[in-house]
Length: 272
Image 1 (cartoon, helix red, strand yellow):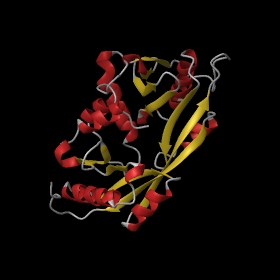
Image 2 (cartoon, rainbow, N blue to C red; image 1 turned 45 degrees about the vertical axis):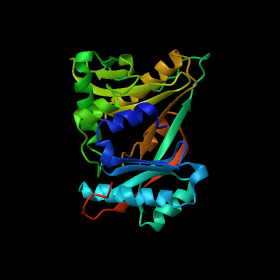
Image 3 (cartoon, rainbow, N blue to C red; image 1 turned 120 degrees about the vertical axis):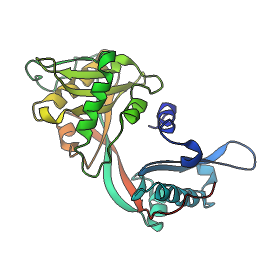
């Protein structure tokens, strides 16, 4: 779920010397790592190295880094089956902030293409032209900005996650266009050769409630089916209020996660 391309994109947005850490044994490969991205952090320890306090130290480090940067909190999204990680975060003062889910729609590559209703009249969905890339990313930011308690994201961050992401395929940035040429929605697809992940999907706030999101997701299903992929997947969280929408379109929850956050207190940066 978190690939080299994701890591490379995230690292391009921060000073790695201040916002990331790698933990090594006296010799050998890394046994743990940490990364702080504003309010979000990653702190993962190899199973063979757990029980030594490394995870606790990384969490404490992430709180210090986020506090020094002026964040009000910092947290990590943990799969609900990982009770060991949840217990650790609880013991360090973390509280649940939101729930997220992975949803999947199975596809039969040898069967008929899936349908989820007729698209709105006059709407076309196609690959975004290179000159439209930034406009699509700005549209997605406007759509995502409606979520409660979401810090704004810069165009540079969007580019790092989408158009400058390692392996970016221009045909996988799709745009929904109204009859008059207005860009009204967009999505980014990630294709691993077996399944397609709907990585980003949003409708311009001025055009919501008109079936654009449904048409985009239906288009993603058709693309996945046409490429003979076995499923289409996406993630959503409780802030978006979109879970029921995706379930009505035939998607099924396969995994659930909780974002656990620790309050930050402004202070000096942690020692190197």
